[in-house]
Image 1: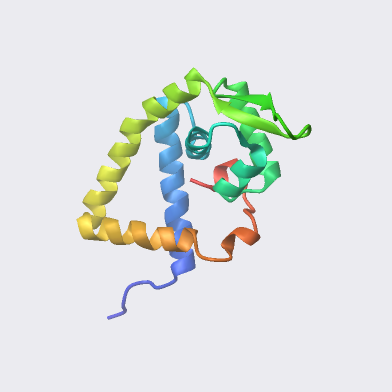
Image 2: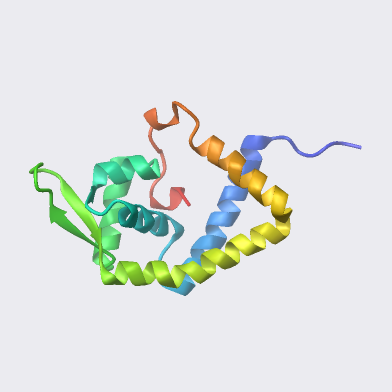
Length: 155
């Protein structure tokens, strides 16, 4: 009898695609935002006045992808871009009331998602998965390459 599929890269890609697609559908219905936009809004809320460059670092995306992401957030009224006080070419980002509202509207769906994952994996499996994914996501040296994907590429 064959053992479990150990093609980790394939399984991670498959799971990420499935979960991102489902999360995007659910978040758009609940709050009008995608999972990538949710991540950006959380990052801007965590560091008010952050720059687009810093946001790219936090999200693991290229600056060009973040430029498009921020444009969509600003066009949607979720963030505002302001002139950086010290760097003439940089802008700083701040959440708007609409951005805060989108985060509040997304919270129940995020809680529901985590509850479903906990039910699927069990408490120990959920914690072990979260710990393992954190180690993979923040492994030393990973940040030097930068993200290859656009807005929809990170959940």
